[in-house]
Image 1 (spheres, rainbow, N blue to C red):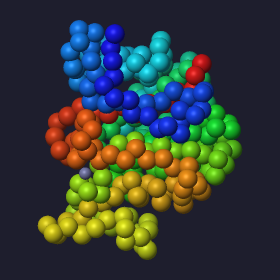
Image 2: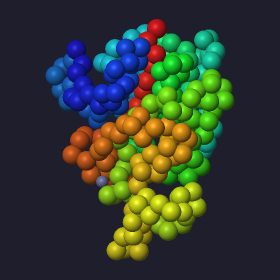
Image 3: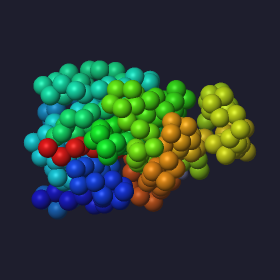
Length: 259
Ligand SMILES: [Zn+2]
């Protein structure tokens, strides 16, 4: 039996019995009792990456369902999964940075290592979403665009939506150059708290604060935005961080409507 060493979940999402969701930790205990790192990357659904995705899904209660992932490109395209028969191998080729679906039994997911993974849910209309919000996606107002799309396509009301922000690099560690800050100054000219000036001449950007503001701008209520408050780069929790490690694994953040 494989055991997750820690369960990374939003308590508020657990209150919806129709949902299964989780964020993958770095390691699990395999059936030989050894500690093993999740390795989700690689091509195709065969081999270790496919096996590890399956292991992770099974550990959170998702069995016999293939995971739907898109080809993440740090853009602002949103893919809507609406065809029951669409193969996940086909969806994998679609370049996008968010997925939405109303289909039950179809887990959707996002890979990150420092970028912010966001899960969003409309409890009235039973629409789920997974968003990849890195620096570039956030500068393109990905969160806001997803909420607007949910309103347009499904009739979602932003004030009814709940959002969970998974683990991302925090303002404590995310050092960027001045040109990276400019889009956020343009988006929120009055918000000085989104970044701070570092001694090196660079800035420290708070991606989580940016997306919280984006969510509120889109009409979400502040009390419906939940944070998993650990920095991937300096957290004592066991998470992958691109900034800290360079070549590293990925965190998988997934959500599914129960069949
Ligand atoms: Zn940090």
